[in-house]
Amino acid sequence: MKTIGLLHGMSDVATADYYRRINDRVNELRGGHERAELLLSSVNFGDIERFVRADAWDEAGAYLADKARGLERAGADFLVCGSNTMHRVAPAIEAATPLPFLHIADVLAGAARRQGLRTLGLLGTLPVMEASFYRERLAGHGLSVIVPDEADRVLVDQVIFDELTRHLFTGRSRDAFVRIMHELAGRGADAIVLGCTEITQLVGPEDFPALPLLDTTALHVEAIVDASLRISR
Image (tube, rainbow, N blue to C red; front, side):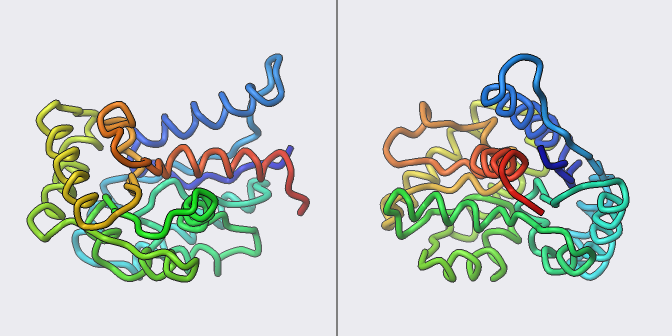
C-alpha cells in the first residue's frame, strides 16, 4: 500500500467525507481491519477563503506548495488535493515536489469519457465555473462545459461558501441547485458535474434522476484508493 498525501481542510466538511470514504473503500477492497495509509495536511480554510476572494493565486500556490513539501518529507508516496477550486494552483503543487499528483479534473474526464459523455454542466465555486483552468483541462480530454448564468453562478458560490462549508444543508438550497441542474440539461448538458467536494452532501441522484451526476468526491476517492493500492513509485 502506498501512502496518500492529502492536502485538505478546504473545507473540514469535505475533509471528513474524504477521510471516511477513502478508509471505507480500502476496507471494502481489503477486508478485515484494513484502512488507508494516509498523511493529511489540513490547512486553515480561512486563509484559503481569503486567497480566493482576493484572487491571490500566487499566495495560494505558495501556501499549498509548502504543505505539499511537508507531506513529501513526512513520507507520502503521491499527492492529492481534495478541493476542485484549489486545483487552480495545481502547477505550483506539482512543481514543489517530484511526487506524482493525481489531478481531480483528469479523474473526472476519465469517468465522463468511459460513459460516453461529451457536454458537462458544471457546478462549483466561481473560480471553477468561470476561470479557464478547469474548463481547459477538460477540453484537453475532448469534453465541453456549460455553466449556469451569472446570477446562478453567484448563487451556487454563495451557497457553497456561506452554507455548505459551515455544515448547513437546506431544502431551499437543494431546490435551487436542482432548478439550475434542470436548466443546464435544457441547454444541452448530458451530465452534471458536482464540481465542489461539498455539493455531494446537498444533492444526489435521488434529487435529480434526469441526467448522470458526476460526483467529483466519489470519483477522486476511487482513483486515490486505486493509486494507493496499485501504483509503483
